[in-house]
Image 1 (cartoon, helix red, strand yellow):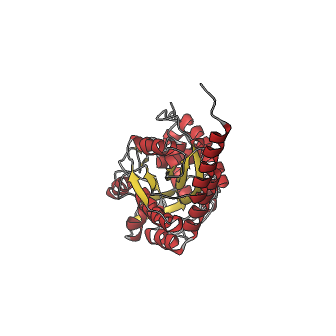
Image 2: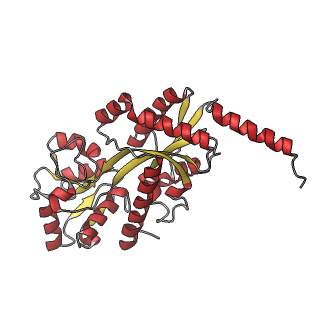
Length: 319
């Protein structure tokens, strides 16, 4: 193959620098790896609207659901690295490759920032005999296999989080029978009906039933108090546990973005996150705001990935 003349290479390089400096010059595609109407879609749409304001170009949300998040995350990772395709990364990206659903990992993306974290909370019925997390775990120890839990599919985030807590407390994860459900809402309805004894999940998901007095939250597995229910003890306050896990969302792009474009996106994402509009939206919906810049977000995802792998393997959910 003939080598390109130096003048051509210089021209191409200068054009690339110019396009990066002018970025963005056309609409941006914002991929949400889950269906319309859910929590991730809602967070994605408010963030897309704020980024549109910051970047001065249309930011169009495209839902790419399917494969438990694989389809949408793949669309983000494999897009052309020119800054015109970005999207939401969710907790599942730290789980999917352990389950052999994809080869993608958190390292497959350019991280732009963590924007949301909703830690695991342990919910029981309002009339449950278990008044504290310690009481609940004591019952599990005393009669392994008696209590049932639900709140997601087998191997979903809330199942894995419960397994991690039990394992950390020296209890076999299968000491609580897991009843798969289509959603946390379905699991909570089963809880109220008496079909299961506990449901791990986020406070935003349990909010309506907690506020209605039908469900009681025993603890939140995080080092910070709940945004919605600050009176609920943290795991450390309840049983001195350090176990923490939850559902999170951040923004990412394909790897190998031009540095100027990456810097522009990073700044825009942080400014959107810090805006009053975003804070008001998240407060209204009950979602937890949690910020980590790109480097911190990368380290956070790597830790999550390692933690997920350990738990999934220990309970036979990794392939």
